[in-house]
Length: 110
Image 1 (spheres, rainbow, N blue to C red):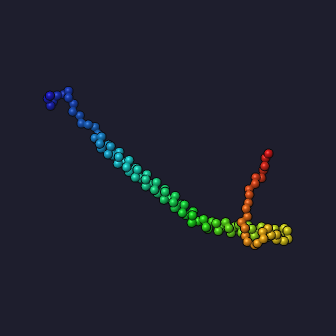
Image 2: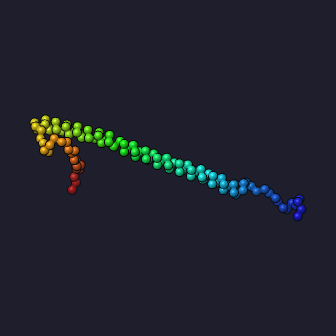
Image 3: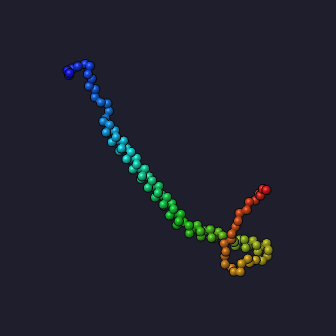
C-alpha cells in the first residue's frame, strides 16, 4: 500500500495509555487511604486522651460530690434541730454514712 493512500487513516490515539490512567488512579487511591488511616489513628488517639482525662478527673469529681453530700447532711441536721428542737440519732455512731435516695414518681396513675 502506498504511503499517500487517501482511504487509509493513521490517526494518533487520543489521551494517554491505559497504564498511565491506572497508575494515576492507584496514586490517588493510595493517597486517600493514607489520609484515611492517619485520620482513624488521630481519632483513636483523641478517644484515648478523652478516656484518660476522665479517669484522672474521677477523684476530684468524687471529692466534690462527697463535700456536697456532707454539706447537705449537715444542713438537714440543722433543719431537723430547728423543727424538732433536738438532734435525733439514727445510727449508733457519729460516722458519716452516705444516704441512699430512691426516686419515686410524683403522679401515680392507676
